Length: 240
Ligand code: BJW
Ligand code: ZN
Image (cartoon, rainbow, N blue to C red; front, side, top):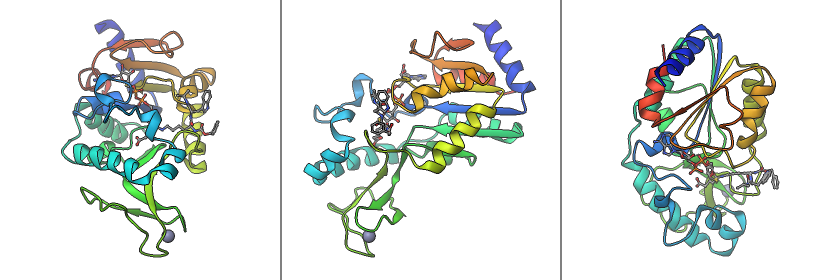
């Protein structure tokens, strides 16, 4: 493993353009449960049952209770060495972009600024009436929350299954994937689209693609180097 780590470190050090894609595994090391791990369940619901517009239409209180549980949990968590190393990498690479599927805000908390939170942010709310987006850090948030502007029901500003990602996030991500020399993919199961297609896009565009994960994923056979381990242990070793 140490040979391959040295190789990746050299690639990163020599690159002008580096893109990073992260998933729940990065925050697992901060104590945030992953979606598909055994601790990702809440009252026997899976994320797939609640992270849907239909679930919110049927029972907004239930969905907000789930988010309150997660907001309470995430509020106590801090960025770990992987978040910190990626914030450092942003300072070192001339053309850097971080694409995260995580909604917990821990990359920003670690100091990352060049990033797209493609699945949204758990600390933002959006009005189902007028579409206004606001920050809300109340823990717990009042149930049910309503828009101060139009009185409409507020929902989490999060991309649920069946919903489209924001066009600016998609465009920025594709540009970063097609234009990078090195892509690091950290702690994602690689099964949720469109992020699941990001590795092949970068690979087809000629990038050196590296995966860091505890377990093999659908990306493992496609990448140039697959490093097995915890994000907090491995990512800091890749930053020059
Ligand atoms: C560690 C570690 C450690 C642990 N160190 N590693 C094409 C084909 C098939 C389906 C579709 C398709 N296109 C669209 C779809 C439908 C759907 C989809 O992909 N479904 C799949 C499940 C098949 N996608 C969508 O609906 C997307 N929208 C879309 O495409 O719009 C256009 C469209 C609309 C309608 C029809 C068709 C197209 C939107 C997806 C939004 C996903 N949002 C969620 C929920 C948010 C809820 C919330 O957070 O409040 O975002 S889903 C959930 O999964 C969450 C995550 O961001 C996302 C990814 O999960 P992630 O990060 O990979 O976590 P895990 O738990 O899966 O994996 C953790 C990994 O870490 C594991 O590999 C561990 O081994 C590893 N790990 N500890 C390193 N310490
Ligand atoms: Zn409103």
